[in-house]
Image 1: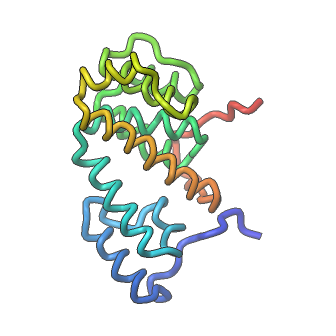
Image 2 (image 1 turned 60 degrees about the vertical axis):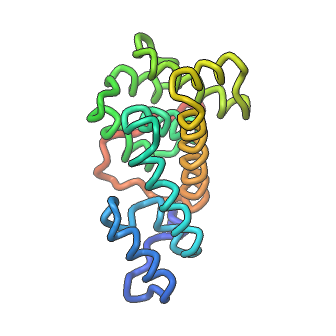
Length: 188
C-alpha cells in the first residue's frame, strides 16, 4: 500500500475541469501543479479557488515575501508539514530570514534576535495557531505595524497554509527523497 493516498494523476487521465484548472496553475507564477495541488486535483474547483487565494497571499500580500514566508514556516512547524517546510525554508532564507531563525522555528523554539517585524509576525502566528485567536496587545501591535490589511493578510497566510497542511497531511503527500530541508520530529 502506498503511503501517499492521493498521488499525482497522469495528465492524460485528467477530466475537463482538472485540465482547465490545472492549466491556470501552470500558466501562473507557480508554473506547474506542485505538491499541495496534487491532492486537490480531486476537487478541481476547490483547487482553483485555493490557488488563487494562495497566489495573492504568497506574491502580493501587504506583508511582502519575507514576512509571508516566515508566517508560512511557523504554520508548517505547527502542523509538522514536511512538504511546505521543504518548499518554504529555502525561500525564507533567500528572502532574508536568518538561518538561525529558521532553525529555531524548526526546533519549535521562539527565535532570538529577530528583527522587530519578524518578531511580531512570529508571535502573532504562534498565538493564532495555539490560542485560536490573538490577544488585544498583539492585534494592536500588528495593526500599528502593518495596518488592518496587513493583519488580515497575516491571518490569511496562516489560515491558507494551515489548510494546505491539512490537505497534505491527510493525503500523506510524500516529500521527495532529495529534499534537504526537513523538520525534526518534536513528538518524542
